[in-house]
Each structure stands twice: as structure tokens, then as C-alpha cells.
Length: 181
Image (tube, rainbow, N blue to C red; front, side, top):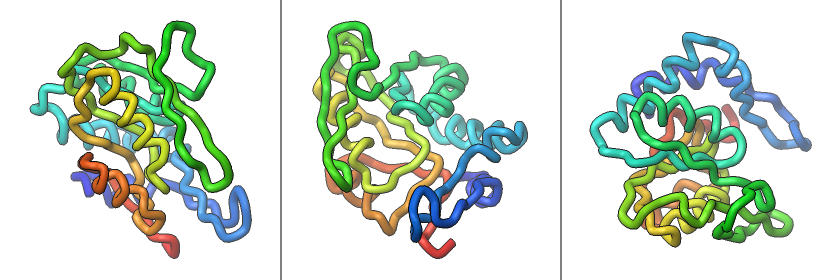
């Protein structure tokens, strides 16, 4: 957990039984609406990565953009969006990943990175890890090196962060929630 992890966690709203019964949705909207909390969130990431020579922030569509853009600004590096299929106008690389029911796909511009670029991959939440792993694979295929995978929230009971670690990537989460919290 980060330097402000408990505080950040206290600002995140839990919406029970949404989008379906039995699911506790972790709503970051109150965190984004609270200027002090949002600043502490970005500061948590900056504090962790300020000395790691990051070349680019790769942020996952769409909530990862909220974290990725100000973090790239603060770290003085570039920002690269990892988009849902069909949203990028230039030549892309794509990666399919499994969802609970079916499949989805993320894309990255083919020229997003130079070989050996040090990339920090960010998103808002790790659940099953499919999106994060697909994005990490895209970065590796494009020549970038994933320095870390980073998120606001980890839901460890869903196994995503373990899958990401098993694939050889490190994981940083500002906070985590168990299903009964």
C-alpha cells in the first residue's frame, strides 16, 4: 500500500449489488471529485516512480487515462493510450484477452515505443488481470519494457494481481479491497 493508501481507500465509494447482485463496485468518482484526495493519489504514484527513469506512461482506456496523464506530466515523460479496439486511427498492434463471458481486445499504435523504452503501465483497478496482461503484452511486442504495472485499486480475491506477477510483471496498488469490505 502507498503512503496515502488508507486515506485514498476511505474516499472510494463502494456501491453494493452493481452492476449485478453480489458485486461490490468500487467507485473512484468521489476520489476524483475531492481535490485533496486526487492530489494525494497522484502524489502516491509520483513518490513511487520519480527516481525510476520512466520513458512513458501507458494508460489503459479509459479510467487509466485519468491517472496516466497527470502522472506523465509530473514525471516528465510521454503519455501513450492503450485503447479499446477500433479507437486508434493509425497502424496498430492488438491483443485479445478473455473476459468472464467472451473476449475483448486492446490496441496500441505500432510506433508508440522505441526498443528498450521503460514503460509504466497504469489503470484504475486490477480485477481478473486480463486487460493489464493484454496491455503488458502489447508493450513488450512493441519493443517497450514494462517497468511496473500500477493501479489505484487491487481486488486480490479475483486473482488478477497474482496472474500478473506469475507472468513476470511487478504490481503496485495504492490500496486493495477484499470482497467483504
